[in-house]
Amino acid sequence: MSCNTPSTLHFADDTLCLPKDHPDYDRLFKIRPLEETLNCQFGKDPLDQRLSIDEQMCATKMSHYIKQYMPNKPHKWGV
View 1: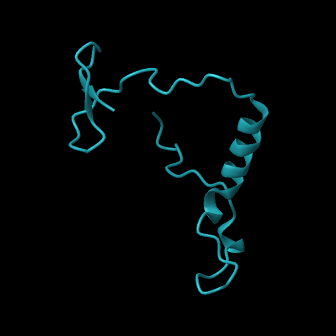
View 2: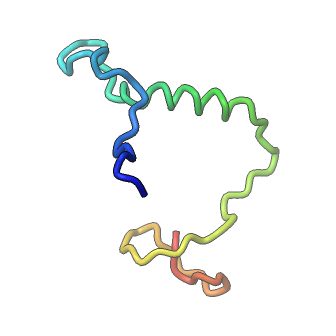
């Protein structure tokens, strides 16, 4: 990897950001363009009548209340 690789990714111009004490301050200002683009693209995809939630188990070693044990899965502990 070259040394000229950018280390940050910006979606909005910081000079246009309102101060925190302004009534129209937007906490998501920096990612708002990305959020609007994704919402627009996801809105174009039709939803199926039957939506399955448990498609896969993601293996994890974290200690969290949502971690599950499923003995029939290849990764028995996960989210």
